[in-house]
Structure formats: structure tokens, C-alpha cells
Image (cartoon, rainbow over all chains, first blue to last red; front, side):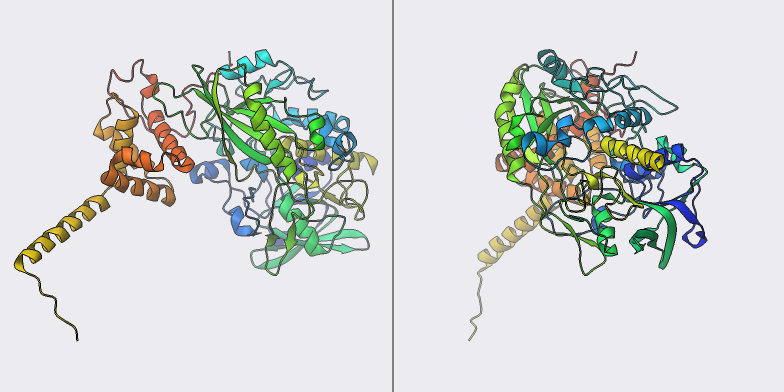
Amino acid sequence: MRFVEATALNDTYDVVVIGSGFGSLFFVKKFLQNRPKAKVLILEWGRFNNYQWKIENQRYSDIPEESVLDNRSGKVWAFTIGLGGGTNCWWAQSPRLHPSDFALRTKYGIGQDWPISYDDLVPYYSEAEQIILIAGPNDLNSVWPGTPPYPLPPHNMTSADRLLKAAMPDRHFVVPNARLSIPVNGRSACCATANCSLCPVDAKFTAENSLDSVLSHPQVDICISAKVERLDVEGGRVRRALFRSGRRDFAASGDLFVLGANAIYSPYILLRSGIGGHGVGRYLSEKLFAKVEVNLKGLKHFDGGTATTCFNTSLLDGDHRRTRGAVVMYVENRLIYGLRPDFGRWREIMPLSLYIEDIPQETNAVSVGEGDLPVLEDFSFTDYAYKSLKASLEVLPDLLSPLPVESVEYRQIWPTLGHIQGTTRMGLSSADSVVDGDLIHHTLRNLVIVGSSTFPTTGTVNISLTVAALSLRSADRLTRSS
Amino acid sequence: MISRLRFSRRQTLVGSLALAALGTGTAYIGSADANDFFKAMVHNELPGVKVSDATIRAFSEDAARGSPRHRAAIRVLSMGCRMVGYSGIIAALGHSFRFQHFRRELLTRFLFATDFFQLPDPKAAELQYVGETIACGNPFAQFARS
């Protein structure tokens, strides 16, 4: 990696990238693949804390996220400020969005359609899955058409999963994920520690262990501790990224600007720069994340091969999405609340996670306050999500009937799923969104916004793979068209 | 006018003894440490399992390395144990989801920090403390890597 000091920046770069998470690095990867001579500068607010530092300190960053928000929302928001961004703290589940997630308005008359379809993203999903080295099963084409074999074999199911799979072969699947199922290139395979955010054996994909081809590319300069404050616009184009490093102000000039500072800071930078489009900073959203435990009779759980073993699509797509959200049920092979406290029946309990779609609300917003931090006002989920939680809890006993179930116990709504979305949405024009389907700003055509801030709807599953695929597609189309 | 309080020798003696008892009781409760709660928890949750004081002490030292809130909660529970016993705590807090979570988590950590799940009959031999691990901590995991 070539780190450059802010004081040493003289050149005009071909690409100036703000932030270094999934969105940014997968964009740079494809951009340099197609234009290997382009000069790229990555501006990262955080520092480079290597794997050893993270394990020793049991945290991802030396800048706690709560210290950089004026959070009045009553909700927790999770992200990482540091080189690699969300690749540091993610849990590595890597499903694709469902085809219907891209056409919610057309199919169910609610929410917003994406300006691209699932089919548009298929080749880039496949490419991202190869780069990330996803371990997954080979029976997912019925859910996600066009899924080629995953590069690594799937992780082991639990005994409970096997019973559910036998009863619902087309609805219960091993979760594709970015934790190695076999050792690769000196990295260990996952050993089911279930502390994936700080994987103690480095089995999880991170920028540090897997994107060295980007971070150490000879054409890439990295400037850390560089906090971008605003973008300087002139003549209908972004000209410079204005940033602070230490106590001094600096500017980085470039031809193309890629903004990937997460779904709170990307809109914050736009708002401070006076850059518009419909809904900048608005439609802040997450999925509702609920926890359930199932008491089992005589069936022992926790014998799967990784932290989360399977997902179930029974409550995913269908006409119910007209009035309530899609739900994906994950089977957890980790001790979220501990073993069952009954002597000898320790393992007769199965934790579940429910990811519940919500409709983004314009009133849930990031704004610029009087201070130097983004302000998050009141945040609320809608009845669209809550109704779905209630309906899910009602049908779970039936859904789980292939198992010897004693009781199904709802536990809680978890404080965050860590999937911040929706504040610079993609759409057809600046009347309904901020960027187009290629992630290019509708009016400032040398500004690309990457990351989950561009999602028009929450979708149903984990977001990082889709963020990576969107960035690969954006960079590919941009480099091929100009 | 403030009237002077007058105590008989007997009242003074009884009062002094009561104050001393209160002080001793407070000191006794106040001196509770994590070991008290863990000892009570292990003996109540694992009836018939042989666990040495050294094992409990080793676990309580490891568990005490948690967050300040975590340590404070254990200390309060330890004092509670000295006052009303483990069963009294369960009676008082057993319906609290947060307490149940806390209790299950601690019990799970204790079991995983010993050889409990490696023994064919954990009541037959004394548990050995092996310590908490940060990696590969699920003793039930099965891997498909042939």
C-alpha cells in the first residue's frame, strides 16, 4: 500500500475516491481492471488499523461511531471508520437480493422500483461472489436465477436445518457467506467462533486480507486521516474534494469523484456541498431485525459449521408484500442468549433471526445541524414492518413443524442490523432520486455515489454483496461508455 | 428548647449491639465479590457436578475482565446472594428477560470454560477449568471438510 501525506498531494487524479468500504474498493477494482493506467486517490477518514491491531484491541477502529454522530434518533447505527470500511465489521453473509426486490412498485404497488433489474446485476453478482470467495450451495437458482456454482463448498448445516431442508427443499438453503469453508492462501477456514465482526482466525473476507490487488495497486495512492468535508462544484462538475487532515484543510483535484462514505456521511457531504437531487439525506432506512428462540424437544442444535447456517424463504416473496414486508428467516448456530438453562437439555434451543423489510420514509433523515456532526432526528419503522413481524410470529409454529418444537419465544427487536440505507437513492431522474442506475449523479455527471445509500428500498437480505455488485457494474459501464 | 435524650444502660447496650450487627452485616454484604454469585450459580444450576473452589475462582477472575457495567451487575448479584441466596434472586428476577439473558450467558461461558462437554458423564469427575477461548469456541460445531 502506498500511503501519501495530505501535504504531498500535488497531482490531479483521474479518480478521487472518498471512503474505502465495499462500494469504493469494488468500484476501484473494476475501474483499474478496465483502465489500468488511471491514477486513483483514496481519501479515508479513519486510519489503517491492521488485523493484529483489531484482534488485540477487540475493535475495528479507533474512532467510535457514536462519537461522530449527533444521534437523536433513539436508534443505534453501526459502521466502521477506517481503511476497509464495512469490510472490517461485517458478518459476511452474502445472499443476493430477490428479483422482486428490484420491482416492488411494479409487482406489489408499494415502495419504489429500482432503475435496474435483478438480471442487470446477475453477471456482477457472480463476479463479486468469485472475488469474495463465497462458500455456498449449488441449489439456489430457484431463488436467484443465474447463480453459478460458488467458488467454495457450503458450510455444514445443523441437525435442525437438515430436517427443515428435507421438508422444504426449495425454501430452506445454506446461507452463502464470505467465511472460508476450507483454508485458502494461508487463511484458516471458519471454525464457528461466531465472533465474525472480529474473526479470530481471519476466515472472513476483509479488504486487508483479500483486496490487496486494489489497495496495493501501483496506480493507487491512499491518504488516511483525511476527513472529506465537502465537494467543490464548478461549471456543473465536481472539481475538488475539500478535506481536513490534522488541523489543516486540503483539497484533492480529479476528473471523476466516487463518494462512498456510508449512508450517513455520503448525504451529509452532499448536503454540506449544496448538491441536490430528490431526497438527499432522506429515506434513511434499515430492516427490522427481530430475534426468536425455539425450544426443541430432544433435538440438539449448534452443530452447524458456521455462525449462521441456513436461511428460509417461506415468508420472503408474495402478494403479502402489498401490505407487509418480506421476511427472511435465518437459523443461528451461535449462542445469542446462551445455552438453554435446563440441565442436560443445554442444546435443545434454536435461535432465529428475522430480517424484515420496511418501506423507507422520507421523514427519516440525516441533516446538517449547527455543529460539525450529521444530525439523525427521530427514526421509526413503519407498520409495514411491524405487521410483518406479527404475522411471522403467528406462522412460525407451522413453518417449524418439521422440528420437535416445544415453544417459540419472541425475544426482542435488536438495536441495529448494521445495514444503513437509502439516503442518496437511485432512480430515473432528479425528480425522484439522486443517482441513476449506474450510480452517477443525475446532474453532476462526474460524481458517482457508491454503497447502500443508493438503495431505493431496503430489500430483504444482507447488503454488502449487492453493494459490491453495483459498484462493479457502475465502474464497468462507466469505463466502457466514455 | 431541645430536650436531651436519655438512654438507660440497657438501651445503650442493646443499641450498640444492634449497630454493631448492622455494621457487620453491611460489611459482610458489602464484601461480597463475584465469586459469591458464581459459586451460588454453579451449585444451583449444576446440581451433582463436582466443581472446586479453585475452578470457580479462576472463572470469576476471567469473567471480571468484562465491561464496568458487567462487573457492577455481578457485584450487585453477589451482594444479593449474600442477602437472599441464589433462589431468592431467581424468585425476584427470574421473569426479567435481561436477567435471564445475563444468567444464561454466564452459565454458558462457565460451561465452555471447563471440560464439561468433553466428559461422558460430567457428574462422575471433577470439572477442570481450561479457560475461555477467543477462537473456535463452539464445541458442538461439525465441519464438512474432508
